[in-house]
Length: 272
Image 1 (cartoon, one colour):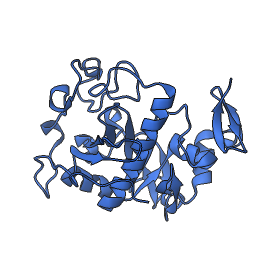
Image 2 (cartoon, helix red, strand yellow):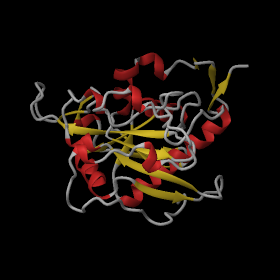
Image 3 (tube, helix red, strand yellow):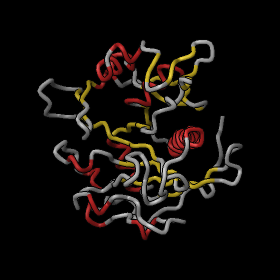
């Protein structure tokens, strides 16, 4: 089901098509992206100068260039659903393959939805894909109008210029890109799965700058599924990846973080 349409399809930045700009040439600071904010809440002042993305001073999963406080429980669930749906629809339109990972994949495991206490949404792309996005779509703004947001909302794709550095020693820039809701400040972290040609375990090993490592046969071929009501991709051996990252208990424990899983509703329900 198509979620919305791009109005316009994209707004390209001044990036020179076909060329990758070096890391030091861009910094999407507060003054260049702010909409209605009067104060920068990004936390940039307290971060090392080499760090590109800055989490807000009020919550690590909000962008302080666009928001100054968190949403309430209900509004955050609604905003995150829109965030995921627009992200998946846009990447599908662009022909960029992306897949769910980490806690977002765990949410899919339970009921194909975001876990209601989780504001940390994660996706991965391949190395060719991040180069494509960084070259052609960095700082593009996509406008979506949906039944839940008929007035429309802008989402920005921002690529960390340090994506060209594939080494895990770049600990300040483990996130390669973000899909950002410019109204709420919520975002999706996008990391890149890169082939590690010198890995001691041999050919086919992949790694991300955040330290996660896995063999490519655990990811590919990707499986097609549904997440938050729209088409999505997940790793081929999703269950093994989840067990390795979270343990067996995470796949079976039905009470967690002041919620319990209702099998009849297939929902995580807040404890009263």
